[in-house]
Structure formats: structure tokens, C-alpha cells
Image (cartoon, rainbow, N blue to C red; front, side):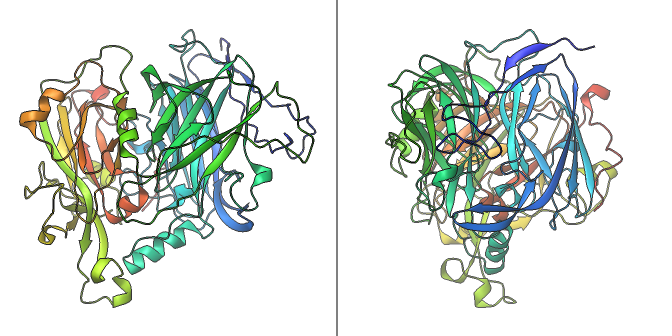
Length: 586
């Protein structure tokens, strides 16, 4: 039996400038709003068909890998406590996995999704069913492919509403709209990364950014499909902003409107007001926006934040339009020009820092204090010397090298025969080792002028073991090797408290006193500042193998990752579930 709870759901209809949608005859202010009846904890069944679909952007049509023919893919709407059963059918020509970004996956690590970490990929023609329950989470998350660069187009929102009888810690918004920021290549993204892997050089930059799959007015052949987001005078709406871009951190703003930040990474925050937010790939931010401006049309804009000096990047702007329903309809074919916001300069780290420092949990929280594992991980780039068996066109990194990246000088190499979790569970030797270093093998001036003798990392497949129930602190330290850069570091299977961030080299003697152990924000992806550091803490209460990696996919491609192996605790409730029978073969 199901007890109904009615919740306002978001308007996910993509309107063009005249407000029309293919197949519908609507006036300029007729927007679809979906009202769905939800229930107490329930099981949801979904089919995801991964397939090639013709998609036209920037005047060109290319075969694009999608889920169910949609770009972006389907939005999943659930309540805290629900169970998801999602059958993924691979009808594409590439291996694929799906990761449910930010879902804790307590004891269900087999459903986490990163290829060769928790499963072997779903091969063309294969099927795998992901089964997991959402417990104690609400807010905005998302799902995406976790195989090669397929997540460039294989992604969608995952929205977790409160349990039945619960409400938001703020007044219920009139409307809710997911805002998925993406990145588009005219070329096949798999070809882009394969060519970069072949040459050892940097991959080609994207051709556009997108909002809900559309580049917007400022790109060629895009204006008629620009996303329209409705608002009415006096109402307050919730924007669920997700950075699904492959390789770019992004600023986001709405012309003439303040944003009240109320959540990030499916954790509530102490509300604060800002004119601009910044999200690294993988991060989500929930903001309230009120229709308090003269009725009209206002641009929503995303532009790059680029912290690596001298690195090429896509310096373009994607737009959507916030459209007041009460505004007079412009004559068809002569729409009014929306107001454009002013965003920070692409390298405005000060604005990013000010935004980050405002993030606080709504109340005092219980931060782990008696630390069992005190870890120090460098994160950054590197260069491999050109191997003697490769030609010069395969070593097109700086000065005839190949680009690399690493954590604690270990450049992570994915296995190719078994997943790490399978190898651990079945006792298969030779797939990984458990000697990932707790500290850098050599201490150096991490953000200074680093000797080039330290620029070449060591490739390997190493994990760090954690006992169940241990309190973990990690200092994540950026390095200036090749170039310092803001790295969005994502930890699978866990949320963590970000207790401090800063610039320069972390010094426990001086920086420990800056730790916020009262109301730090809870995240699943933390931005490690350019030439700076971040400190996170969590309780290791989820057994399994959990990758931690930079969410700039170019960096994980180069090896900026490691994995934790969290051992079982005592009894079934502290142990990893058995692998499902349909786990994909290797």
C-alpha cells in the first residue's frame, strides 16, 4: 500500500524562444509543470538503453552516445529511503558503466559504477542491473557514465526529495528546475581522448558549453533551441545546478538576480546570498531565486573558471533565459534581448575563494576528532619521459614528453582483467597492491619552483587500506609541477567534511588552528585551490573499494586517482553485500 505525498516537481520542458516545443502548440508563456504523486519508501524500476543517437549542435549532426535517445539523459526523481533498480542495456559500440555520483552505496559497492574499480564494464550487447537504496540523503545529485569519456553526453540529474512527512529546511519553492552545465565537442569525445592518449599531448578543448544540452544564443545555429526557464513575479524557485562538464570548472549567474545558496552535493547549507557561484565538475549547488525584478527576460550564464596558467581552454559562454511569465509577450520573431550578467574574469580565484569560504553546515555537526589515519596526498600534474619504443609523434607533451598526473607521485593505472573489488573479494592476486603511500615519497616545496627531477611519477595500481570505523583525515595538497590548478577531488562511497582550505604549502603547525570543527560543509567533491590545499575528514563506515580522483576527466585519464579499500567490520551490517549474479564479465 502506498500513501501519497504531493510535491511540486520541476518544469523540465525545454522551450525555444517563442515558447513552443515540438509536438505541442503552446503560447509564449505556456510552460509544462509536472505534478507527480510520490509515496513512502518504494522501489523504482528504470531501463537505461545506452545507444548512438543523431544529435545536432552548432550546425552539425553527429552520432552521439545517449541514454534512451536523450541528451542530457533522463532525470531520476526519488525520495530519501527509495530503492532504485536500473537495468542498463548497452547498445553502443563502446564499453560502458554508470556511476550514481554522490550516492553513498552503503554495502552496495557493486553498484557504484567506475569501470575496473567496482565492476568490469558492460560490453556492447551486455546488460547489468544496478540496485541500491538511498539512505539519509536528500538534495541534488546526478548520474553519469564512468568509462572513458562517455560522460561527455551520458549524464542526467538525480534528485532526492525528503522522506514522506518531511520538508525542506526552507520554504517550499513554487517551481524547481535542474540546470545541467555541460560541455560539447563537434568531434566524438572518445576520438578526442584516444588521440590525446596516442600522442601524449593535451586533448582538444571543447567547442561549446551547454545548459540542459543546449549551447544557447551566443553560438551558431543555437538560438532557436535556447533553454527557457519560467518564473513569475513574487515567486521563489529552486535551481538545482549541476556541473556535468567534462574538463572545466564553471561560474554561473543570473542577470540582475541574487542567488540564495541552500545546498551543495545533496547536503544542506547555512543559506547565504551571492551574485555568482562556481562549481567544479561533479559538484552540485542548490540556489533559490526570487522573481523580484521587472518582468522581462534575463540571461542565465555559465563561463569558465580556469586556474592553470597558460593552459588552453574553451573561453566561450553558454546561456539560458529566465523568462517572466507575467511579461508582455513579444511579437513572434522579434523577441526582446535578455539582460546579460557580468561574470568574474576567467582566472578570478579571489571570487572562488570568497564563495567557498561562505559554505557552512546549517547547524553544528559531529566532525571526527580522534584521527586514526592522518594522510597527506599531493595532487597534480607530471610528465613521463618519452619511452624509447615510442616515436616523437607519440610524445607531444612539453619538450617531447607525455602528460601525466598523480597522487603522492603514483600515477593510477586501471586494471584490465578484473575490477579491484572483484579481485579483493575473490582473492585474485596480481591485480592491485595495498602500498599506496600515506605521505609523499619525497617532501618538497609543493607550490614553489619544483625540481624537474620530481616531475615524473611512477605508474601503478595501488590502494590504501582502511579499517572499518577508522576516523580519516586527508590533507590534499596541490603542486606547481607543470602548473598549479584547482582540482575538484571526488571520493566515491562517502561524504566528508571540508574543515579547511588555504593557499601555499599546508603547515600543520600553523594551519591546524584554522580547522572548522563546528559547522564545516559536507561535500562529496572538494575543490583543492590552485597552489593550495584542502583538509577533509570522514568516518570509514562503508566497506568496499572506493576510488578518489580528480573530476577533470583529462586528469583521471592521466592518472590523478587512487582508491581506498575499506575492510568489513563486524557482522553483516558492517560488511559488503555479496556480488550480484549479473555482474558483468571481464
